[in-house]
View 1 (cartoon, rainbow, N blue to C red):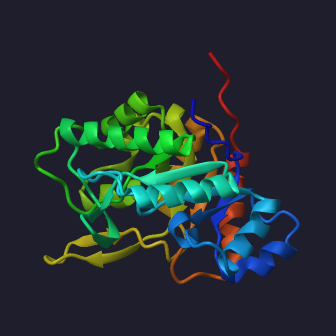
View 2: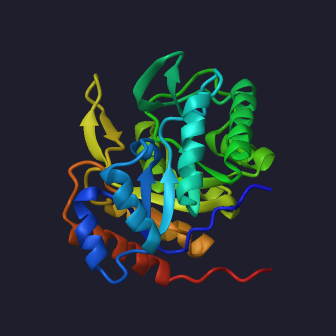
Length: 285
């Protein structure tokens, strides 16, 4: 049985080296820290020195961006081995990846690309998730994507696709609420029905982040999951809606670009804590 995700039900933030000294000087800055796996696949140096010091003091989430879970090709075994070595070294409370693909043969794209939701891709993703969980010996959380196009060949809704993967593999789900908002606005749908149909009993972590608005080739609004600005009021509202139903869930503040100072990032985490403190986990029926 894979080791289950065990993050505390409180806010965390993505670790940025520029904040390292501030974090060490804070008595209890946040509940946990997230790092991107691919930034720590070297053997040593300052990144590992900082991460080791952080791990001694705080809960840790490892978030992968390069496994290409949604690819129809085999998983990169060398990458998976490096990921296992990293998780064995730091024993994080949680590991997560994206429902996306990012490589083909030996070509790697600096993006998380969407996939059609069909029985064929479902079977392939299930195979990949099983392989990752078996190799790591721990539960994986799978994150819903931010999408900008839809596939005409899709025959399964995104929520049903994720729920079926979780049902077949035992993986947990990572609900990125900003991704839900971005996708809904880009596809002219509503985020609340998506969230109300999401299997919250399988959600082990929530992500909150900022987005920015651009225009597409015909001048229509296009939201980009940019992680470079404060969380919008609309996303905070959706977050309150979700945790009112789910109770407290580990919640990560994502801010990866145009990184703010530590007090600004910490304030976003404090705002998430206010939401979590306002709810209690529903009583069992």
